[in-house]
Length: 146
Ligand SMILES: Cc1cc2nc3c(=O)[nH]c(=O)nc-3n(C[C@H](O)[C@H](O)[C@H](O)COP(=O)(O)O)c2cc1C
Image 1 (tube, protein in one colour):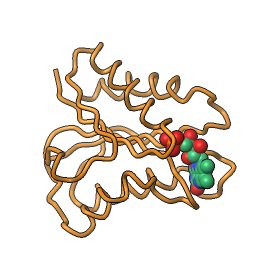
Image 2 (cartoon, helix red, strand yellow):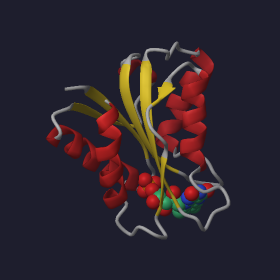
Image 3 (cartoon, protein in one colour):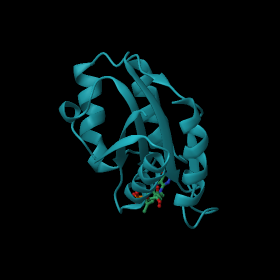
Image 4 (cartoon, protein in one colour):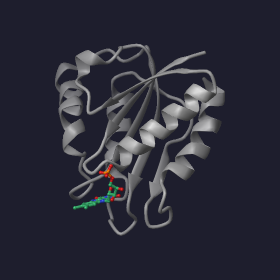
């Protein structure tokens, strides 16, 4: 059993639903989960497993509710070397900046010493009307590495 902190960045709720769906699956697999939508840095454990789920808005921008966390990490430079993370993006291939936010967030975590588990998943809402479906399949494979 592993404890997983799920962190979502969302404007209209899709990424939140995806995070909650993956948390349910992780619980079914016997893991403990804690889902935080747009958390601040001091509410997150600076060790263990994070699963970051974010949509993209503007032109490749982070959703507003996860911008404060990204700014805190960039400004305070916490040591994230004891954090391992998975990353799931939700976006639309209509935009040149497809899934830009999860790429920005992944780079930020890696730059602060966190280690990535598995490959990032980037879900295209043009292809997946229900983003929970590919996310659910992905998290089952991702969880094997926990
Ligand atoms: C104004 C606007 C800008 C967007 N910009 C991007 C973008 O730059 N890149 C991308 O991949 N998706 C973009 N999207 C698509 C959203 O990421 C997608 O609709 C997603 O499902 C929204 O999830 P949310 O409800 O969790 O915010 C944009 C959507 C809107 C409405």
